[in-house]
Length: 59
Image 1 (cartoon, rainbow, N blue to C red):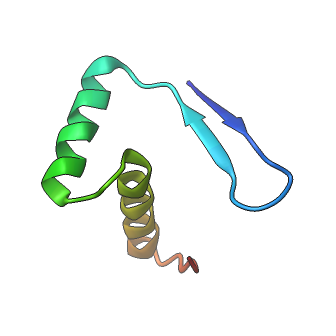
Image 2 (image 1 turned 90 degrees about the horizontal axis):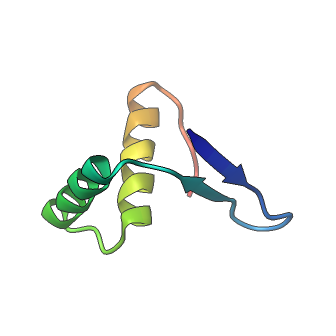
Image 3 (image 1 turned 90 degrees about the vertical axis):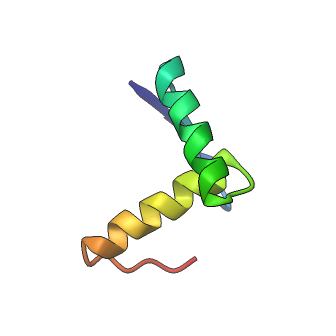
């Protein structure tokens, strides 16, 4: 289950509910990958997935 809340201007904010085991695995992965924050890690992973599907986005 996820909750999405949008601001009217600028970048959108997305809130996710994750179980503790998934959160711990995500924290381990971001540290191993060298990302500074969980949000940076998630955005990088999503961009990589989208590019793999042929969807090009601009930062």
